[in-house]
Image (cartoon, rainbow, N blue to C red; front, side, top):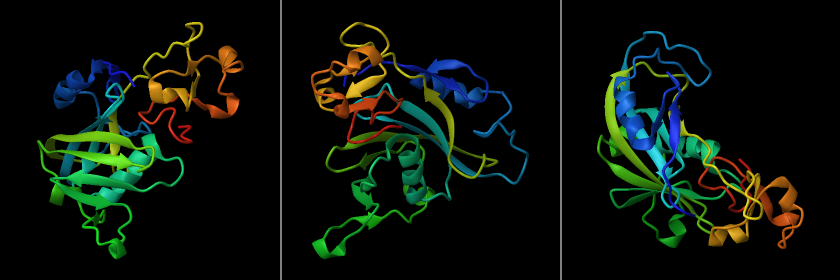
Length: 226
């Protein structure tokens, strides 16, 4: 999938910025902090929070800025990423941090050195650290994550929250140039297969190969529908 630059919106103030511009903006945004449901956070005892930036390793136009309690576990982050961007068929997944693999399922019978995900973020991640997440080891979606900063503050909502996310990248239909609404899961491997509703009916691979266009680096892969 082609690389590209996309902009997104701050969920607190509505400002539009690039991924790197959003990093700078979130350090100074003075809008009242709100949860994803729109509830303004009340002042409570502050906790240690990590500001994470996650993007598609091979599709960096898809990105999110997250705020996560340092007390949240890798399993919590894995669940969040699955729910936001990845889950389709219950595939296995793993984080790689400092050369160590933390897997969603550990099988000691195979003699692997993988560790489980029941470990707190604050124990394995600090500001400046980069790491990766892989979902589905057949048709893998690989994400790059970076802890850009850490600070103390009130937790938002129930845990990990989206601070900002890219706007859906424009995808023109390969046939007519109109906005694509479907993507062929076969043709997407070569970077094509983007189709509008009308052109999708005559696509040579058949309608059974089509998946909806969604705002995720897993668009067009396996059975992912968003």
